[in-house]
Each structure stands twice: as C-alpha cells, then as structure tokens.
Amino acid sequence: MASSSRAQSVDEALTAVIASLEKEQDLKKSLKEALEPVDEVIRTATAEIHRLHSAPSSSHQDIAKRAIDSIAAGKGKWLEVAKFVPAGEYHRYSWALGPPLRSLVTIVVFARFILTDELTPSFAVSDLIGLEQEGAESLTLLAEDYLQGVISMVNELPRLSVNSVTAQNFELPVKIASFVNDIFASYSLLNLRNDALRRKFDSLKYDLKRCEDVVYDLTLRGLTKPPSA
Image: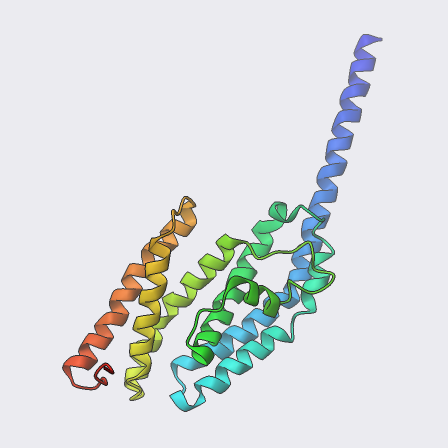
C-alpha cells in the first residue's frame, strides 16, 4: 500500500511539472512566432539605414526618415507580442525580446543622429518603437538593451565616417567624432557590472580612435573647417 501510494504521489507531482513545462514551451513557441513580423520590420529598416554608407550625403536625411517610418509603421506588431508576455514577467522572456529591441534601438538612434545630430533618449526610442502604446504594458525597454543598442550604433559610425570622406563629405566625420567622444565620456562614468555590457563598452574606445584618426587625417590635409571663435 505504501509503495502504491508513493508511486501515485510521484506520478501526480511529475505530471503537474510536465504539464507546466509543456505550457511554457507552447508559450515560447507562440512568442517566437509573434516576433517574426517584428523581425521583418527590423530587416527592412536595417537595409534602409545601411544605405547611408553608400549614398551621397544629400540623401542621408531621406534615408534616415524612411528607416524611422518603417519602424513606426510596425508599432502594432508589438501588441501581438505583448499577448504572450504575462504582466510582471518580462524578465522571464527577455532572452527572446532583448535582441530585437537592441536592434531597433540601434536603428533608431542611428537614424535620429543623422536627423538631429543628437542621441535619442530611451523613453523616446521606446515610444517610437511602440512599447508605450495601450496594450503593450507588459513590455519594456530595459536600460541594458538601450545601452547595448547605442553601442552597436556607435560601432557603425567609423565606417560611415570613412565612407563620408570617400564621398567628399568632410563635415560629417567631424560631427561623428564629436558625437562618439560624448558617448564614450558618458559611458566611462557608468559602473558597468554587466559582463556583456562591459565587453560592448570596450569596443567604444576603438571606435573613437578610428573616428578621431579620420578627422586627424582630414585636418592634416586642410580639409576641415577651423573651429569657430
């Protein structure tokens, strides 16, 4: 009798756990499927923003606007994603949500730098992406994802600086170097305890040097404007 009772209790305990596991697996599958349209938005916006590297400076503003518009048009897709993230449990699903959000941050701050010559703050990025709309309350842009996304944007700027010189645009590299220097200075003040973020931060010093090297070369060749008094 004791053995039968124990076997029954074991069976009941494992059955409950297995049912919970299957439910969690189904939820993860549904979440991945809901993110597929978001990934398509990211691919479209990424392809657009990468045109900056080969396009003349006269078209940079239009390219940046199109990238922003393509992301803004995809706001509604986050409502479907939010259905599969229980309130207060965002961190349990950050493994799936973090990567696309970081990619979107990169595109938005890159495009907005071209448009405004400024770094777009986290709350503005979150709103533009679609995380602040009604029905998306279970989603959030974590500080870590924003900071990593910004660094990924900076990683693109040395290439843009070099390509700008090739296109005879000698003003943009100076703006880029100043912008990267400001970002590097601000990140240097942070106490980065997150290993992934700290490794990403290490790349900033190399990006800054590459950007400054471009400006230094332009200065030696007399192709930069002297600083205003």
